[in-house]
Image (cartoon, rainbow, N blue to C red):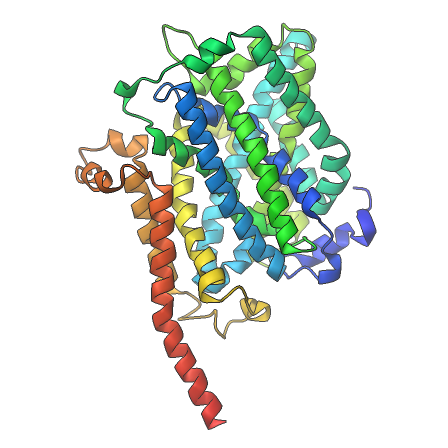
Length: 485
């Protein structure tokens, strides 16, 4: 890896680990974050998620759900990023204030699972597209070769770290090829297909899923899946406010764009007799691109753009591991996570990942929406926008609670998860309604809001109210100590 910009070297990234980034080493500006998060939101997997919104919804209603869900999710992403920028610490360390030093290990473990899953799915999607290219032009399929190849690419980028990727890769090359491919896909959509028919396509309400707010939940799940990672990058920001603005604008524009492309393409490519098939959208899109002029080039460009998602998942998995085992080096963990992602990709490919994609997204929403309701309540409402950074690393002090775990925070997190699942009504819950027959009745109370808004509101308010009780006790003890001194 070449030397990083302005004296920030690989050795610095390695030595920081999960420690606070020194102020003089925080180099990234609003433009950097706009590029980073705009590029991370551009993904074939985002297009597949857009395809999940139909045929239950019509095109226009689904597009509204995309806009609403993106704006909600991007607000959460930007606000969580502010905490990383203000403290200089990665997200999993910041969560020690709300969950306790050891309580944050629960969040780290859950985050590791979702990130390895995401990295594996990214590798699968890239391998599927590359296989189609090499089969057509080289007579070589080599599917598992491509899985290993893209796993190694993501691994090497993760070893380099975020400053190298943003400044040396995304800004100089990656973002521009991604924009070019996105424009090509958009122009092709209007040129080849009857967009008027796509725009007028109606939903089929008899399918029962998704309704409008369930569609919003699916859209929100994509930016929410990045919440545990956002501080890993925002800690490199010069100032918090510009970084938050860059994150919000960059992610929102790209997410709406690619969600909409997925929605439009699945409508265009669907077999009218069989209905849309979100699980095969990647294959259908690749098949339709290859025969066209420059279709192969657009596909290569998309593969180049997709590699940064694998990087982000592998890099932040390594950071989450270091919250659990600080002694392990970043390079060692990045290599281990990259190998694990390749192995999981091979397993998921055999199990058929696409069939469970929507359930995966809603479970992610259920886990992380209430968790970050607690996190944002703790930082902005309870702690008034300030953490004692040294205490985040101490096995004593205000963030140690009882044995290192804030039981109130963990309990509120669990309550928020239950509220989300009951309100969102994922397909797996509907399919097992005979086992949890009370769930649909419970969901009817919040059926018009989906899972995101109720779960966030409940977790935010419950945590804030609970904190008033134990903070009152802490302040009383502090006053007594000061009086005795």
